[in-house]
Length: 126
Length: 110
Image 1 (cartoon, each protein chain N blue to C red):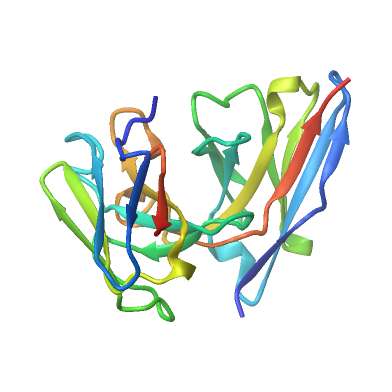
Image 2: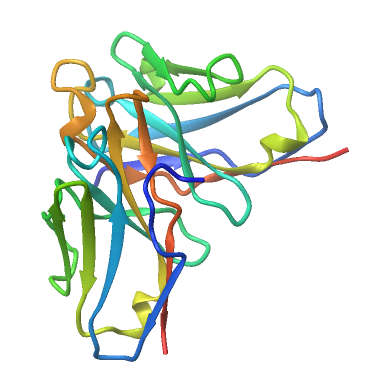
């Protein structure tokens, strides 16, 4: 079974750093792009960026470029989303999801995200 | 304000049929595939429809998708209480170079 399992909920203070994880199993982790999606409390879904674990090629949404860092460690089939200095406005649920096709070679226009991780709730409060 | 426009909520009685619309533009829906995701209360999104009208394995055929021009629709027939969820449409946007989502539609089964 293809599965993405995310790390547990985090409670942090403004200014602190954080790295959350997404571990893939049941498929070749290095062959599929992994995307990250934010859902703020009571709000909709926002795409943050995407990484190819095979060579760590990473693309960011302009809205999130410079605000977060996406990385991967293919040796342990895990993708990461990290912040160097959290803000209260980073409070949200964060999901990772597997991209269906080759983001570069095939383009994203005919692809989708499946499956999704269970989500990691990040709470930033003083 | 979302790039793709969905109604905030829809409601219908059990066993009836409901449709959820998703309106976009030539840079997203008009030129790329539309996907639909179902988010049950307190759960992660789940792929419901991909490539405009295809059902993933395991998804009930009570769900169907369609697209025309710069708009797409999700239809759910034979409504059941378990269908109560938020539904999101999504597509790649060629101008913004991002995946864009609709604001989500909350389905209530009366």
